[in-house]
Amino acid sequence: QVQLVESGGGLVQAGDSLRLSCAASGRALKWYDMAWFRQAPGKEREFVAIITRSGDSPSYADSVKGRFTISRDNAKNTVYLQMNNLKVEDTANYYCAGTPYFGPVRVRPDSYDYWGQGTQVTVSS
Image (tube, rainbow, N blue to C red; front, side):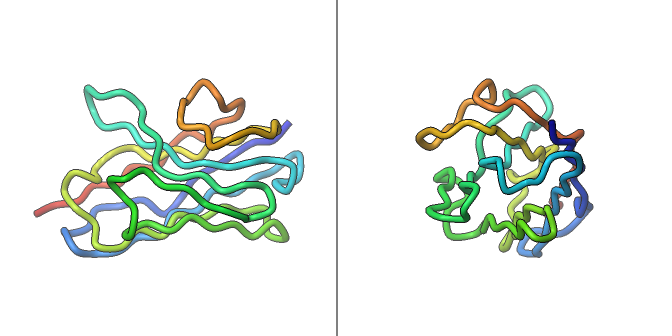
């Protein structure tokens, strides 16, 4: 199985950028479709973006489309989330998640088998 560790979160101002990383160990990342989710206090965990194991056809939540970019480097066993033009409403704990199973775009958290511990992103106005 794979272990996932996120990094790159922090406190930024609205309009700034951050890049989150999700480093995998154990099994190679190339066997997994990977996604980013986020969870704000008092809210449910929500889908942000997904990228297939080959890197094809990333998909995004409408709330981040055009601002966030998901990418992966299988040689480095790492998935990234580039976040530009951050907004206060992007404040949340961000999690990467992986599944070894093929399928359509999966936006439900219970579609994923492996999770990191999360990294906090706080955007101030």
